[in-house]
Image (cartoon, rainbow, N blue to C red; front, side, top):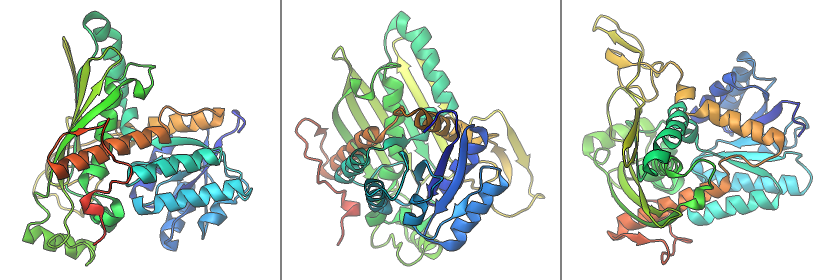
Length: 411
């Protein structure tokens, strides 16, 4: 793809996360959104119209994935469809490219890359067999706070006192938007798979020396605890079923809404470094809360998405419809509330998409590839196995290739 031309991308999926990515592209140069496919006609048409209104390109709503991939003005696709569709989607992409029916050169995939380690490896193999550049869309690595914080710590503190040894990452909110997220057999798990994929990778990234490959830290072992703290209680299970449909019944088949994990790595000198991660669908506060810490011998870095500079207060006299206009997963329209002026930038979608687009335009691999997505799924499967067995999982002897978390097993 000539570097002087914009990257022409198509979206596979038109749900919440697709619109978040679309919003971020307003701050990214050298990109045009030329197509979208999702199974629901009204949603894909609304997405195409939204892209046009935002001035991001003449986006066409296609009635099949094959039709989107065959579009003559398409350079790359973003896979933003539900977890249980991603492997089949990647198979269609690889077949279309291999048969000459698609001229795309690159593919990017939203987190997590897959539901199991076996599926994740297949995603990577399909992308490589088709000769595609591939990128893993882990937005938190590109959060403005993460980028700036890591740069300052490794430039100023590490040379004087030594490398960081502990990264803490927590992400919590009151629960996902769509029914499939709550169904273990479709999503692949509960909150551990859905949200800890962010936490373990941003922790690993903060602990990795700038410029060094992510695997310069050797993954040694994992331990975890999971629980269903809120959504299996009768009152909340009934509420969830009423909102999400009969297929989501947490009195019979709950997924975990809380997870805590410890990942131990070894650096190049043989020293232990640790990622401590906590995630929850049982947090009710102003909205989505992401808290990050990086600790070393004589320093610490801290960041919270809800410790904003901008806050608003609305009294009981101010009423209005429920929404998420102040912060993602907003739980109230009254009281003292934080406001994120640029959610797409703070969460890392803007810089993440900018990086992916410029890498694909230049014909080079981005910082995060499907290989990193595979590594993340391996960490998550080790954590699930630890939670199930009640034991620390040693990676050297663990057999995770065909492991499926209990919550995702059929029957």
